[in-house]
Length: 213
Image 1 (tube, rainbow, N blue to C red):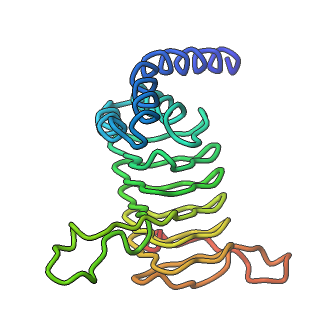
Image 2: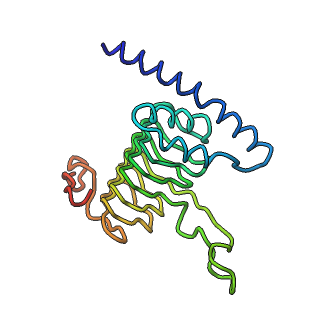
Image 3: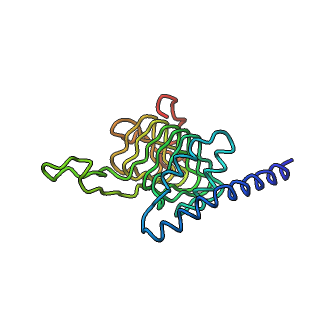
């Protein structure tokens, strides 16, 4: 049965790659000529609305072809969008419903819950030029790095790096870097304990309360 399921999954991945290949190929070709994204965001918005397992396979296949890095073993749920082609997604990453990801690197085995926003840094729009609307001032995008085996809780907003083996509580807002092996919650997010076991001589890992994640 395991072998059959694996074979069926491989067939689904192959069909998804064939389906999205024309879109991805056109985007990559025009991107090379223009030196910028042309249809990438339009494509990602469209494929974000494909429901069910079909949508998961199609999104993974498109990002596999069009992103800097996105292996074919990721799960990207309904309504979720990655807006920058230079974003990098690691192996076995799960991205929940209606999540938005800007310029980011996400490590292997990380879980990004529903309605999370991973922004391209804290200062995307300039504010210092008098008489010019903020939305017309120079933009600055900074890559945000999410470590390996990290869990970002639902509705969190991430504007700074988060290390390996971390847990970020639901609804938390990360404005400063979170070191590895940390549980951080709140607005702004503060570290409340470690995820390291007692055998290392540090604080024992405790279950994270449902109210925190």
